[in-house]
Length: 189
Image (cartoon, rainbow, N blue to C red; front, side, top):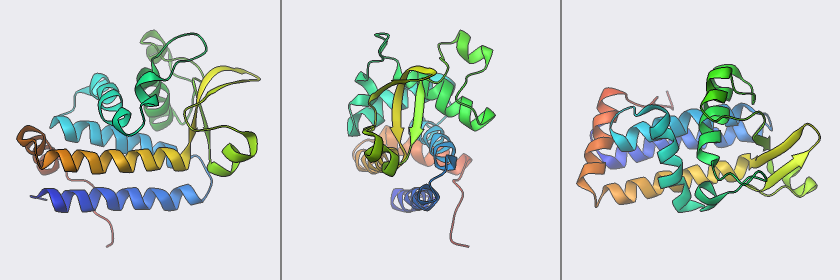
């Protein structure tokens, strides 16, 4: 891939596949979405900046489409959703298929069950809006993630990235650099 339009088309193609996964009503969509966010964080930086790059992506790009990504406050008073997204959503789900962070992630700020996952039907039925506080049963302090809303937010962030890349030479170079070194999976074959 050597141009922004082609890159945008392929990345949005992967997002459309996530919508199909989302329609099944299972948790796999969150695993895939967390992995896609990781890829996007590398894309905008032109390199893998690890945990900090992921967290910065959430607060820089995701918050431009929904400011709750940067200003969500947990019941405990902490405003660290990007930290929880990295340690619980990305690392917990992608590496362990669990919302319980491993000891290393806990040492770095991850908290058990700080994120609750659901789909739109359950969200509506139980009155659980996307990125709202949750505390029921063994889950004392969490942020609700509604699959369909999360996917929509990611889609808007992707579109925003490519709009800005047409005006920002550094961002454009970062995108093309990452894509040339680590091309995204191409679908439709």
